[in-house]
Length: 166
Image 1 (cartoon, rainbow, N blue to C red):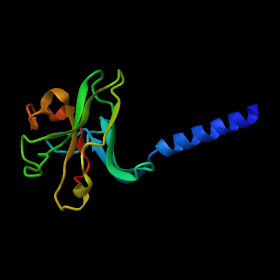
Image 2 (spheres, helix red, strand yellow):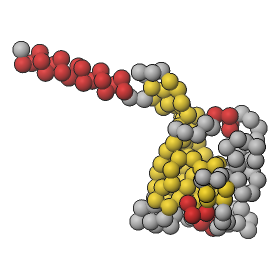
Image 3 (cartoon, rainbow, N blue to C red):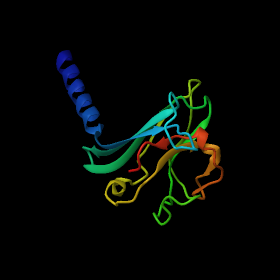
Image 4 (cartoon, rainbow, N blue to C red):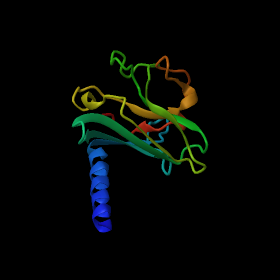
């Protein structure tokens, strides 16, 4: 009886855990790099990052949603950074100073200059099919006002820029 009870408990636990899991399909990746603002060339041995775009499907609800995950290395230690789309959230002002749409919450780097984050609150799928050169950057949190959707300072030597626009 004891073995049967344990077996039933394990089966139910496994069903609950597997039902709550979500499955992600990577749809695109974007490399970010520290760049020389005079030439826009990638800085050798500079800071770098990666943004991963995926579609996540949850088995219970069968819902697919866009998700963005991002990581960065070799940034200024113990400093807050923000992932942004360089444009307005309504897509009216793409690649126009000083519009910026914050993606996810700001992240503080570790003592080694590393951080990671993610967001499911930014619909990106049209980025890859709208024939507009989209720019995704990691900037100092102090240089962007997320509430108003604007960059308030420009310090490009402290940012990460996309290798190629998407």
